[in-house]
Image 1: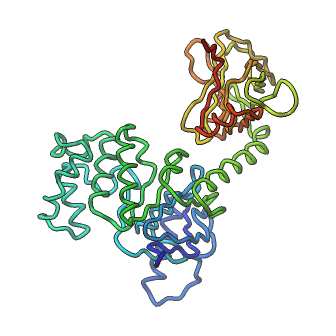
Image 2: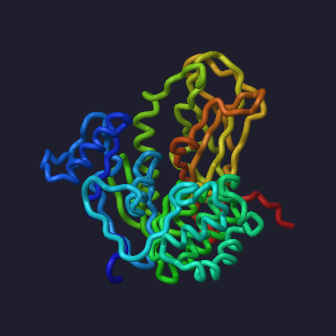
Image 3: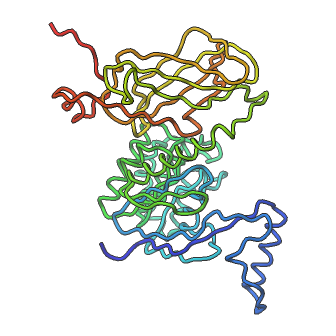
Length: 409
């Protein structure tokens, strides 16, 4: 496929948790680089209060390829994009980028809040070598794409976060970069604009552009990206297709959560209730099947005895669509300490497939969550099978989610 447009070899970057130490380390490192004094090279070692944000990362990206960077918060995704864009200098390793790079890494990056949207477009374009005449030809296209025609002469400091994201992507997209870096800032935009951006990304890739994409949305990743890498605690732990990388990520979350959840639940006044887990039990045998009864058992711990509502939701395998769910309308009294909540789903209507199960315990007066499972952490995997039949095979072939009891007349 030709030469890579991005080549990363054994890239490492460390940060310091303490400001004063960080400043002292920075002065030491600058003095060592700018003078003939040869001190001890500490680029590959951690000093006091330091940690590795990235450690020995290596990968390549070629023209026309799209790469998803996947991982939990704090895994090093945004740091990697900042290094690729040149905002952050690595401590060791090598990064080679062929061509011009544009980025959406953080809201307002590259924007002067006092200047208007139009003035910021001119400034950003000038930094990348475009003349005023060239920008004049692009200005209407940028304003149309962002949907900000009437606000282009308004200072950016008065823009909402969604408006900033729209202008930021519109500018980056119309400067025709060789490589586009997109962090999860698109999440602040409305759904219509997100669809517009994803449509542009597909056209951009078809035209030979290269994309590095960071998102927590499995649907977005699988619809845009061909390849994926998984970062865990700053290290690259998996590389493959985007679907394979997401699957590996979810499986690792399940393993980690399953091992750690009983030991890490801490109850206090701010978090008086915690969900330990929720399990799905078939009515007979050990396989969950379409059309058969299913029991859900939620295990919780409560600081005090209290009334609460509880419910669950079942999501598609990409976690983009809530297929079904239920909320118990009758308040239940939670026992102090450990306890269980149960429900029965008669004749499970889900078609065969892989799903994710989330649960919640709510305050009955305000309906605010007291405890959640599957939103801030990994949901519970749920696999449904179907008895062999022509109807079930036909449903699976069109990705049908629900099986209805229909009275045909």
